[in-house]
Length: 263
Image (tube, rainbow, N blue to C red; front, side):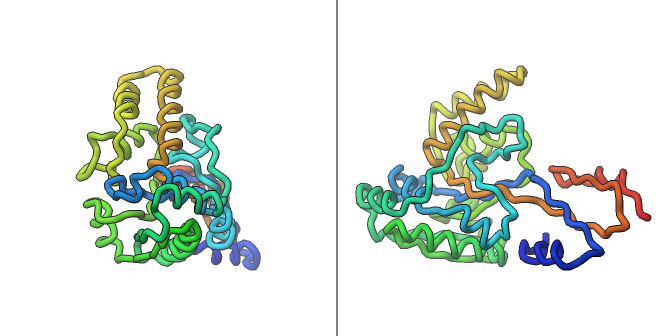
């Protein structure tokens, strides 16, 4: 994976290469620990959501290689609920929510890996969220340590990414109460109504009926701010001009190479 800035440079300056940009299946988001007494308050989670300016990060840190996210599922997924909308950035409203929650000047830690792009994004996000009246500080860790902390619930906020999401059953893995740590529900989010929907969806073979349930699931997660979706990462393939026939796969598998020819 090349840094976005390098890709932009190659697009502009190198006539021997061809850059293909295409929608992928990865979503960056803020993971929230519901075991934390501050973050358990919905007003605090809403204030964080209102303090984040996604487009600012996409434009200045991702060099435009992204799209605002509203769900774990990406827009090219047939189960994606397109009616979901993020709140507009509004620091004044965020400050009022923090005061109402009795959380003014509370300190929160945002954890990231030591990947340079993650650190850059984390710096901007922590500054944006601190505008709400909270004090959000960034801590970065070597990947193994970071991931171990996330798995064991040793975090308040964590900058994460779901990669290769195709089946909407990802919501059962990420949010069902039965998946609370040491399962994949790292934020320890619990909602009995959501559990019932997820249990039903597993046994429904009819696609249209299954969609209806997963649309409800996405609405609940979005309204409850179980996570804060950030952006869908745009994928990039770079080819020499002598290579033809390559059509990238959203899953980043190797099948497209079976059609490639070289002059």
